[in-house]
Image (cartoon, rainbow, N blue to C red; front, side, top):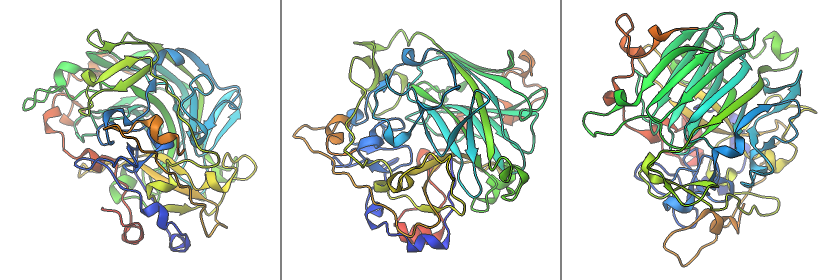
Length: 478
């Protein structure tokens, strides 16, 4: 997920406090006072310690909050009522209250959740607050359409293990499948499946069957691809570069063809996005419709260290399957009244929206407007450049200053800082012939056997491609 839009108006926005938040990634862990490395490579506390908190680069493995287990979300989720889907800064880890959260805007229409992308915005991400450690997930969705508009259905773990369906708006007969291990880039991991009938005009079932030793992607009940874990072993390290850690469900719509994107991203997304397309007048936005999501939880690995049944916890910062335990640790944290630390304290750029959502807007306060709005972004070009994942902060066009959310991380005498300690002070139709093992006529780009060629740099997988102006203002390392 990766993109950022920085315009001249950013210079008028004061965010000196935001720029002070330390960054995190390979070779750089968070300090004790801001112990949690969030999904965007910034250290913080509060909501930074919830979904997306990367134990590898946090102060300690247990700095991140425990993750709610899969059983909380087992069954079929329909979206006839979206009132229980909360803006992500309002979620405190209490899975009994909120199974889903979002950034951007989620509407309810025709018994579906509508993920919107209004003019000149970064779109919307809907994600589960419960995690899955192997299981089958089926999403019944209609994608968006047109050049530059990208729709996603993915499983994403906190340490950047990822299983994807991606849909590029200029080809509504294709579903791109992909996977990543700890965010490592491997250009041989993608395979595109054909979808009968338009992905935009018709609902289709997209299934990810994630098992300990394989992943199978299905479209409308037909297997279109199978990946075997044994085929992902890196011959040098001996490590299976295979998604293997608890992951959240994410569905999204985002502007891969925005002018702020690298040219490779724009080309992959089908060309420049039309911010004056008819959709932006009626109904007023590009959109993805989510009819339902069905979750079937599988048993955890037999080797898993199990001392409870409520939460997944990282016990080591390697971020492998063996480093996850199942415990009875509480998943909730305390968010201080009126503020949280997970975004504006993260040193992210502000995007001034040229058209703010009106009455349907889920962003109801200046504080919320100053929070991070994420969008799924992929970079893909003939030169095989690909990046993933980004943060952008949203604010109304008339706002020339942003409310600064600050959080004081609590300290303790212990050798590690936990999420609960710090939070007390803050708040993407085929057959078996399309599997990866039958590639006599498939190009190398459709196979899964070249995992050893994975490019290194998980941090780069998540780094926002900021302009020079933004970098100068924020003091970020490009």
